[in-house]
Image (cartoon, rainbow, N blue to C red; front, side):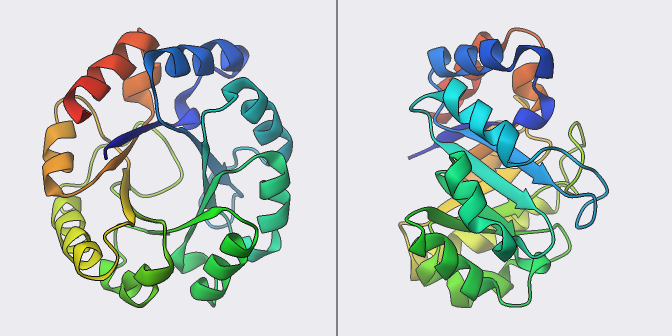
Length: 217
């Protein structure tokens, strides 16, 4: 089943409750929360205190928390307490990714692993039996509003084949540069969870969500 996850990286932070409500009313599946530490990526966003506030605004809409931080294993319990439903971290951010996956699942949360554009999806093969989600970054992580890297389509297709062979229940999420004009292409390549930031939060939020879901459903 295809799912939409609007990214808070592009939200109006002066109107978080309003904009999350508009997404929820339009039928979004998740709220995507990007956590950046200024080390793993060259940007800083926010941490657990803000996520607690977002969780309250999101109500029963699950929070898809994407950790772009060094050594994410240090904070799994804290992000659970803040309200994360899914925690996805980067393969490149820790020495033992499988150990972190198991830590997340031991907390009763869904676990995902992301790969940067230059990291081959083959690194996820051994972990796929344990994953609830695999995330392909289609831009360099750190900043919103970037253009989709065309070579990502091949990676998405490759990962979809691996998932179907190893763990068909695993979601395939794609994050970065997805807009109305390339959404269908990304879905056809094999993605079933779409992260979109500026394409959702620029202009009429409710209409943007509905337009995306119309293509996705």
